[in-house]
Amino acid sequence: MRVKCLRTYPTEDEIAAMDGFYRDQQFSVRRGEVYTVFAISFDIKSKLFGTCTVLLLPGEFDRLMMVPLGMFEVVDARISPTWRIKSFSDGGVLLGAPEYLANECFGDDLFERVGDVHTIYLRILERLDAE
Image (cartoon, rainbow, N blue to C red; front, side):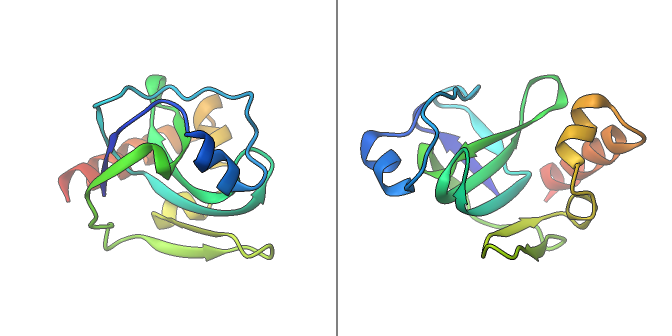
């Protein structure tokens, strides 16, 4: 799945619809740039995004960015055939690679370069880019 950035911050209407969006955050995305989607999270009343769909995108320094879907146009809607679904007790759902879903601390471990998480991240990105 690939998305094109339309804007760098949600509109006021989008923020109102999210019911709980934390306004004091910034997103390191560039208008017009196309991103490969690493995973998709359907959040229910999260502390950062309220209730909305959040994309996990590869960012600078091999870190994952979490960005509301409304800021993007979907340019290739095909999701990876390797993706799986993980459900949470609050009703939230996460779609992503099995290697990503198996590690609840994947994003933190990637940031801190714990174990082989960085290698797994690069392997997942390579696979997604090839699809």
